Length: 145
Length: 420
Image (cartoon, rainbow over all chains, first blue to last red; front, side, top):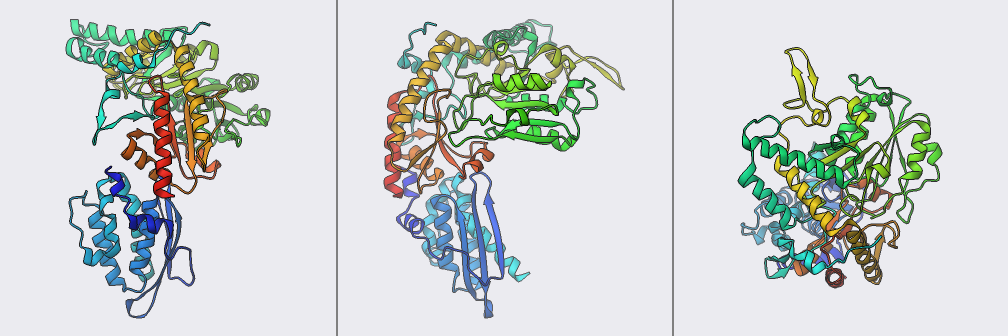
């Protein structure tokens, strides 16, 4: 039962009850990212405020439990934080996902996102977890451009 | 026709991989033969024997090994010609796979080096495929349309997963140059009736190709009875190795077609500024071919023949009926494709309400050792037509059992518990 450990309770919770889901206005940038191998997709918007604050991250999409839960966790972590803080979480999450399960996650930085550590052992699913996080990074860069 | 006795347990003993265990002591339940089939010992041993005792290059080496290897390679061509009822061994072209076979034909159209009227195509001309094609029978025709300005058109698919022939006479018309359709859908399991479409193609003077990748492994397919112009299929789905596929074509059409790849062994004579080409089929087999793979495919058709294609078809029909009944009882499960065994093969695709196929596949594999395919199965337009991004697909072959269908059903109930 290797994969069942991947489906942490927290992931299933976010999948069944996604936080912050739905596209909202106003927003500074909107991006659409797809995972061509499985057809997962996400549309994601960011709204930035004064002092580098992330006012809102709103999203809609379809896909597996991993991709949908990852978007929900991203919403919780990014909204209300600063651009700088949130991008450092994205970097740490990316490092964890690409670590083939060999990397110790920094729980202080990742918070709930640490629940995805098991996903890194399944190369086919890493892209699912990263989909919305890469979309977020892209949206932030575009809104600053 | 009498069907020889079929003993699935005896068949399973021929496939070494079916008795292996997966990590964690899980038994393997292989329900992904539509993706690629497993190989019997007879194929593995033949390939090993060829590599160990007979290997040399084919067609060009004059020594003993060269002639033994050539004999085995060309012998495989004879076996495959007989297996599909080709009227001549020269009509069997070895390719890398079915995709290459279809590309060879598509490349022949609208090609300036091909002056044969039947292959002339340009703006105003039409190519007809179907909405249930594998990408391998879509993209080469898109290339052709883009290259020549011809128009790509397609038959639609009904809610039940059958081809809609309502507009046959409008769709296949005097402007149509080629109709290329799948024999058995790799997603729906639907087996298409070729003759009404062929009759219309003949009426308007269009050529016709059939992608038989999913039918040749599972039922008796006779190209002479089928009576179309081209048939493509692939070795790895019919107990043979990967890296070998087949294009069958009418000899006079193959002769009219330009070579596809240029290189060694496809020539008759070469000067610095031009070349003449070898007769068919070698004209289409540039470079050192997949020798051991062809020999392996020869062993695979020997094996299939020894079991009997009618017996295989009958076994799969029983399994499919069993699976359709069992899956139909799972709440929230929707079968995408025909729900009867009539004109249908042993490929069953479905969705589970509220659960993504990737999650389904992961749990089936992880907890039950059940190998299925999840995703769009290289048939994205078909999934778009049904308004879904992906399905879970179980596909059966001669070595599968009802106990394995039971394992799938148990697994699906567990998946629903995890994600419910």
